[in-house]
Image 1: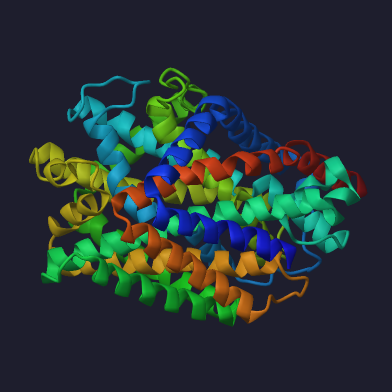
Image 2: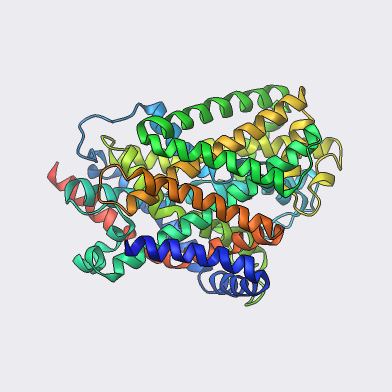
Length: 498
């Protein structure tokens, strides 16, 4: 109950503050964002890089073969398991950003590369920078090391499957039973709610924009309200049915529809350009991997986060905020899998699939812009992400149908995030193996209501939420620190036992 009151109360106060005085809230969020970007940016960059590299080390240690979760065989098939994991990060915004980020970096080349925008020279840097933000490091922080920790402590030591358990190596029983653990759980829940409300609110704007563009339905708050209410109903019902039914079925549907659409774009779009830019962009990504991961050249100063703050630091904060609860989710669906297979799926397979997804969607947009300047950039003006996606899809054969299906896909993607996160928030608040349906419903509805409040106060509300995501990631990034050495210790110990 205290955890529910702290996290639920904080979210309620944030929504109330947005309704009462958005300007004052905006000022507070901007101040917090500047502090996070200025003083935590470098720490986050090092944390993500170290998490990825240590994860690779675990794969080659003898202990990496150890089966986790107390089951001899996996609970889910490889396809079911991979689908649920793939839908986590991609659902958080992969459709929005797959269209928008490569185009943004193509038109305004990242400062590390400094290529002339909107020219062939800007293609590889644009693709490579998108790969950095949605590739190896982003996926690793979602639960490679922290999943190993949680599976060890929960299934083998009987500790709670909760964010507080990540602090057990440092604080011992005080992390499990004291106020430290309560704060850790509350911070993780708030960060996940902030990270999930953003895509929910953005989906309302995107689908509303799409309905206006495709069917002439007015792009007004009433339309956005109906879209978000429908989305909340879908993912709340899915979360109520649990991991093995609703969440798994929604994830499988998601992967199948995404696969069909990607295949269509790959064949009907600029196929040669997509493959060429994927391999050359991946080469640029690997060749400049450490430079991009630790790039500090455009870090800005206090009050001006600079390019790094608005791009890399924002993404790292967003993904870290998901980290503890996503590790819980992956721990729940990965029983019977080895440490090695979990890390390879999370840190290598999922990033490469995501990168190819970005090249198909974003690379198609870049090819269209190169062939016909203005075909994408005109719609994209003012960083209009919904317009970028529809500008790309409408230029394809059967553009109307493809645009409509991409809107459906986007909706299902966000629904998979909503259902899995409301399920895991409820799990954090419950000691039962299956969390009470009432708590799952509450958090599902609460995230939808918060998104509607932020949309109702104008576009500034959603943009402030994006900054708020970064602020909430500060305490969560400290929770993830012990995983750097403890996952390694656990794996080494398992190697000695074998």
